[in-house]
Image 1 (cartoon, helix red, strand yellow):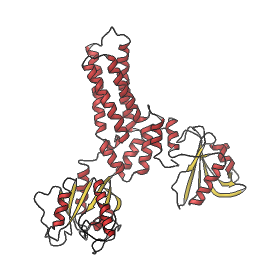
Image 2 (cartoon, helix red, strand yellow; image 1 turned 120 degrees about the vertical axis):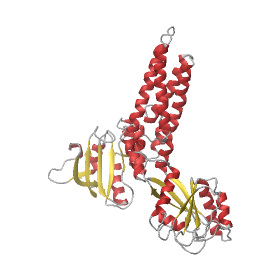
Image 3 (spheres, one colour; image 1 turned 90 degrees about the vertical axis):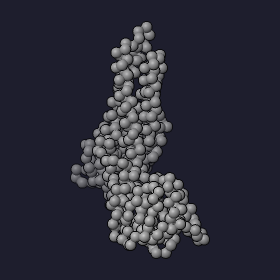
Length: 456
């Protein structure tokens, strides 16, 4: 399939000023020649154009103009895929872009699979596997911090450190295997300590990387925070204030929210998926009962609870039940309507941070955002942390490498046979190589790139 010339719409589907159709492969210039008619006195076909130049013309099919376009000619190897690439910028809109793409496909290109352009960039040595994953992270980033972390990984900061780690392990493996060729000669105590020192450094570095996994996943996927409480305490008002816009209907009528509403907000650089739930109470209304059932499902999946109470009213038996129900969850107690005279008294044994807010005046919202951030990510988010935040795939590979390297250290320290040490160290080297794609399988690549959109 690497010999095919592929094409796809590289911009989002829908109405817009422009759309871009990307063509990549050995026949990209020939395909473009067959469907692109250049205009003007200096008009040249793509195959005759110099690299990294832009040309005005029409996409033509069956002697009929499909659209007016600009064609960018990019010759290998100075392209994203390291193949010949032609990008046709046409008018935006579903029909215009699809018509241009259909013309390109009719002239010899194949529709690209999800992530196939990035996969080719990896297979052709333009980027490694960690950088390829950073492309997807970049596209899906929802906060400035997530964007910064993706850019650092795309720039190769994580890859550079992983490659250094792998090189050190390979050097140690080569030293051990050299001694296996001379079984009558034992490793001298000094040499053994030198090798153990290298392996210990590698072990500590892998531990440092593994500690970034939770933060990395948090920046990539965000955290789910359920807003719960009895009806009319201000859950929907709180959601609107946190989002900075009116997303949920606010009404004095109990049971207004019949379904869960999910929206993502940037809270101090962390993507937080807020879920406004239906008020939990006894009801005979079938729609409200279904809303509460969905609320309980959302609660079960939530990693953080914002339990909203009414500051202007005494604690109710209903409130007490929910305070007990959510005690085992990571939570914040949000006392809304703090602009009104206070009548709320919380039990002394209530666990969880308490924040007073007013959704009417906006008071207390900034301290609430600080409390959310501190609860999910304690401490400062430093720039150097963003360089090496690993994802769940990296985490699995590094855990296997860490365990295998630990067995190697134990074998050397216990003066066990060098064959055992070498076998485990090979496992560690291969596992570390998986992070950047120096050891990979077709199934692994298919799994990673199938998550990309078509056209990337």
